[in-house]
Length: 394
Image 1 (tube, rainbow, N blue to C red):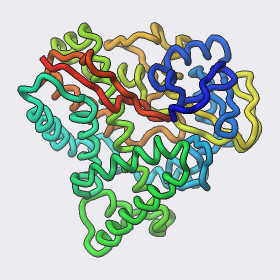
Image 2: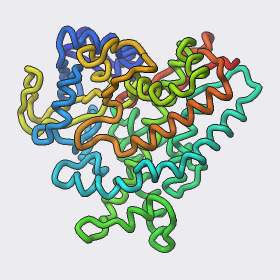
Image 3: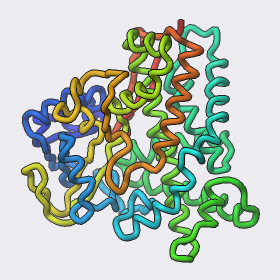
Image 4: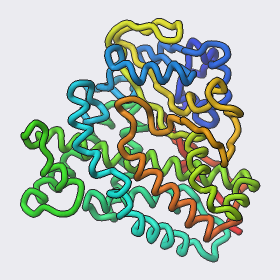
């Protein structure tokens, strides 16, 4: 990815794999919002990038012109790989999403909080007495992996395999479709074994839940089950560990916010919402299936759109002091979990994990900062979060 032609004009030739975009996209988005609210590039066979809140919102709600069948921008895209409901359009989307909602209500998620808290306490205990750690690898990335493994009824020891699949599908696979197809095949085979075992002996887990689910009175097809399981694994891990990592990165840099949270833990709920707004990890794609006009810009059929919820969340037309983190912000209609029919079903799970992770971390390490001797490295492509987060503890 580092050998790609550099961008010379973000409005007409942007590239979300450019190192400047990966390291710090916010000034780029500010420039686009003022200069060319909807950027375009011929890279990736043609992609649009709206930077304003109103435009992102309009596209997210327009399922007639913008399809979700392709949710990632790739250089050489393979045929669409279904992962319902996120890759589903109306009318198939509604029943696919509704069958999952009971498993992700606040009450359903609350039963996993004690386990999430125990995971976080175990991780912080393992770091006790150390002066350095990697906040991403040693902490943030461990929490969602273990929680989603518990929800799926899969051993947490599979975490390295899960990490590899996420890296291959969401990062390496942007420029190498063979990697995507291989990883998807491996995931299908992995989950097919677990589906077969649950058919023989159902348990209290999401795989068994999907096997018992019905749409129109009929059981889900194997393809639907495997696609949904791939979605639950990937979306349940990468987005949340990226958000937790971003929160730690901010608090390591901003001592005032960190100390205020330590002194006033009642601010945690609003702080989590504000950190989600400021560092929303997910940009999702849409395929233009009919010519459309949004925000004064023409969108041509057959091209893609990068629907950047993080950019929308930084729009000063929507948020006062949009470029600042205000941990007691009162009005905060952020799009960190998306908007429209595809708003994230896992928002209650993510909020719980982020809140618990920050609460337990700050109890264990009220003072920490970035390690100036090592660089922070960020993920590449459309889920943004630190992959290496060197910290000094104490």
